[in-house]
Length: 236
Image (cartoon, rainbow, N blue to C red; front, side, top):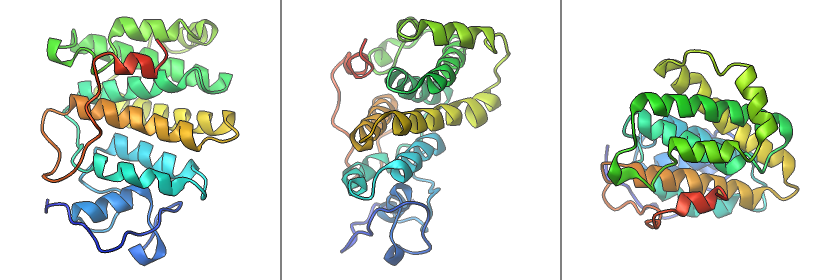
């Protein structure tokens, strides 16, 4: 991938995909532009899961405040993930942050997603010492689920016994968590712009802390977060 370029002028953030910058840009199209890639809302510079969340936040933000997201675009350039633990950690962070901020139907879906993510994390073994504090542990996910006991009981009853494959987690469970979190926040908040931005910041912050390789040269990332920042973000 070529080094990130700094264009003379940036396209305006707007909903959906665009054929060219002069027609506007969604969050990930702007990322492709900064990364020097072919114009696309599915660029190679960002992991598909994080890119999915960014597109959803972009499209569900208001026209008035969507441009506020532009400052976060450079942070996703080079965040391509480091494997299944990375994906599970980002998924858990998004679900945990949103679960008390969404309507009941979305809480049930997020509880089910968290339970599935927890089981996937258990299969990966204990979180390495150097990553503790950067992502939620299995025990901390239990604390989150305890905040919505009725929805968690429902989720355990309807589906927690199913075997979860890596493919199922990556293609179905994790993307569903992203959609439910964004749609739930959008439905529950009259002014959802700031909550949606905070959701994206939590995901990017988690991804940055877990990234084993640095982002593309010259690409700013979110400022390093102190240990325990994620617990505060999800109100634990």
